[in-house]
Image (cartoon, rainbow, N blue to C red; front, side, top):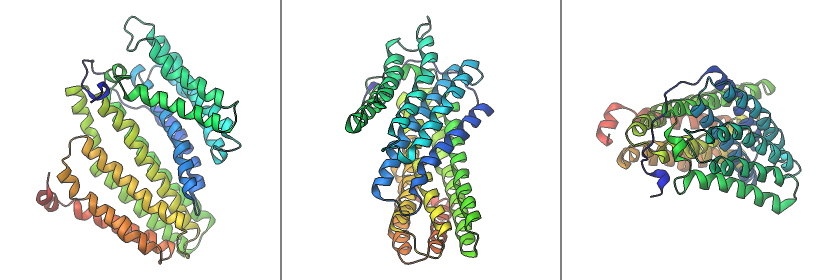
Length: 387
């Protein structure tokens, strides 16, 4: 086990709640997510899915770093609020460049990524120079300045060299945060409740944006079949929200008790960075598939859209299961619902989607996932199958 996942002798941060300004910032960032996922509408290829993940991850990592910075410095700290305002145009630039983010606009995407990283550097650098510094001065420089410089430099170089610099920049951030203790001193000063709340609220906003995708598509394709697909899509998103707040959210909330008892930096890291990335990627991919179904409800879903629907549901439920397992659920408890979820969404929904029209496929998705949630959450089932 690396030092990043061991309990450390750090003091727990002061608990506080998210404020309206942070929620406003999250609304801006969720727009970035859905602009990046726009290329998944229609019949996306494997390359389209890969491009979305490659472009979304650096943006997500930037959001997480800003969230953790506000957490440490306090959501009412004027300098933290100025930092959020300063970072927003960087996300906007990344989103605007994302349709050609791996092509003609890669330079603009890189400048946006550099912008975001350099936005939070001054606060950490100033804190590192104080007597009560959470981190040695070299860590903010290595974690913020070096990746920012690499992203900025990549805008001026061509092709393979550019993407190599991207990989090095992301690798530096991941390595420092994950291996050999990393930024665990900063984790110890964080409010675990605030982190869990911010991620949970962002999931709510992302789910709401998924509903908006269906409504706006329906406005352009206003037919009975499109309305049926939109209604089935709304039911699917509502069921996923219930699933998250029944399974994933209570599991994530256990981080509060765990952080108080052990100061486990690795647990905090996983719950606010890696697993939410998988969860939110799944939600965005599902929303793209639902938008395609509403736009073309009387045809079968294109192969890419069908994979988006089934794969997005798989990613969502896998992230939920991993959250539950990470925060104390026994494998036996997951065995009572997760394998069945895989069978329904891959073994049943996918072959059904090959023959049914798009609106009917989405309706089946809602029925399968709604029935699964109802069946596996009944008290009698939970008592019989495990804690």
